[in-house]
Image: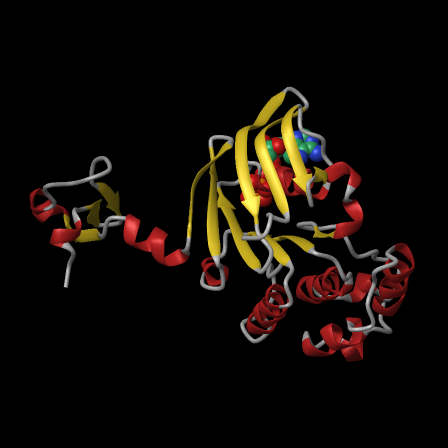
Length: 258
Ligand SMILES: Nc1ncnc2c1ncn2[C@@H]1O[C@H](COP(=O)(O)OP(=O)(O)OP(=O)(O)O)[C@@H](O)[C@H]1O
């Protein structure tokens, strides 16, 4: 087995006074698309920043190819949740800006732009783009940097249903070419493409596994109306919960509804 591309070991971080990560352990392998999930404000972006080497943990270590991430930033391409595209520039000028900035910027940016359906808009100022168009441009730019580790924060935000499969194809192509991708997302549509999912909870990685492993570890949900709530026994993982006029509960797999 080859060494992981990135390893986070017992990572603690504080943003201002607030403790965010409190002992994160995570590895990212080559040929892997790792989907990172967790609640709002849980620290996914902070963890991506640690992997990118732009945020230094207060304790623990983050290594990329066996060296501190802060010294290996040339091996990483980051797509932040927002703020990559420069509004005053046209799409094409944005591409040129990032091409000058990154020595590893590859010529396949044209392919990414075309596949994402943005080729005809490159001459327009980004200030005139829709939110989804900005995201397409940012994704094309981040994907054009030829590196071993891609860190994408909600890369499909605002993308329409026709474009999301294009983005997924792009991720798969990167993964199949031997790179690693970490995709932070809330969107269930992105979960299906994961090789592995990691859940960040209470400052730690609470669980990791393939989508199949995680699906089979979650007990089924049974739903009934309030009058029949007593049928929801035995209940696992806490009490039944009300949703509108119905009551739902996690139940043992043996009572899985047909
Ligand atoms: N620049 C900043 N200044 C102050 N606090 C910050 C900053 N960046 C992040 N934080 C805090 O760090 C915590 C983790 O934020 P982070 O953006 O990593 O969460 P997230 O899991 O990516 O959330 P979301 O799902 O909403 O995108 C939050 O409580 C947030 O308030």
